[in-house]
Length: 341
Image (cartoon, rainbow, N blue to C red; front, side, top):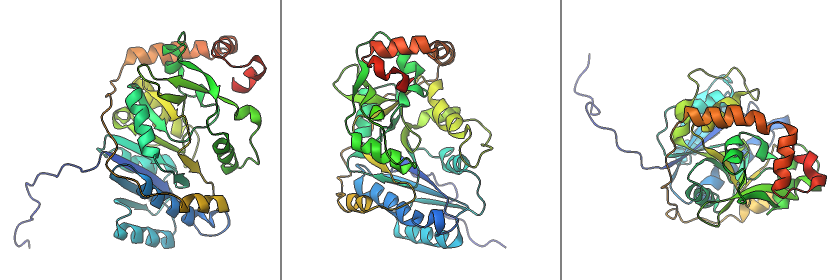
């Protein structure tokens, strides 16, 4: 039998006190072999977010079939207050599907989706917000520039700036960071041709500069673009077309720009701890939590712009002759053209 009255009945929910949520999918099935350093790297990721963020951030961690020992450690972080939302799946439901567990219901204006092996650096959030403010059409911004992103889900940017001198190839701001990224994905080195120049765009009404395109490792999104998420879940555990369909393409329906900060404010670490990572982590400084302005333009869905820029124009700019001509007009050396197509 029921005795008394539930104290939550007819009570309105409190408004969320966060404007920014970070979602971290985590899969660590064991702590040996490939995953030997995985939890230590995740711990650096988690704590670096709190230490370097410029606002009060909510963090959601989705354990995607991790081992019981890992889940127990996560519960410890949850009890410490380092994790605001902890979802534990006993089975591996796939990286994107684990992200969707939180993404479909979160209400924060900005959502950062990050891999569990990313080290956040000081001012990453502040620099992202500067890009959102300077580029009203920005829908997704990464604090970690990656080479050759100008070819991926950027046809609307190229359409809008095709005849503008605000888009061009510029010297890479931080070549060492690009090299570290290449090594983090298993490359032994990065050729000079990939860390010499990169496509940049200048804001319409300011001197703010950004990189055209962004990666999948760590990206901050305007929440409204996810109103166009597919209603069904991904069929892939990892890879396939899942990230393109669920994380990249939604921006296109809103004519949103996918950009990166000009300088580097995060590192992708991979699965092995190196001395430089520990040194970088130890030098992080506690950030002021009240210096980020969250006001930026709200994006609206446009079927016409999507069809014009991401169907018709995308087919045109995909032709090598047209793309080469465009890149040459934006300052790319003719000897490097084949490296950027």
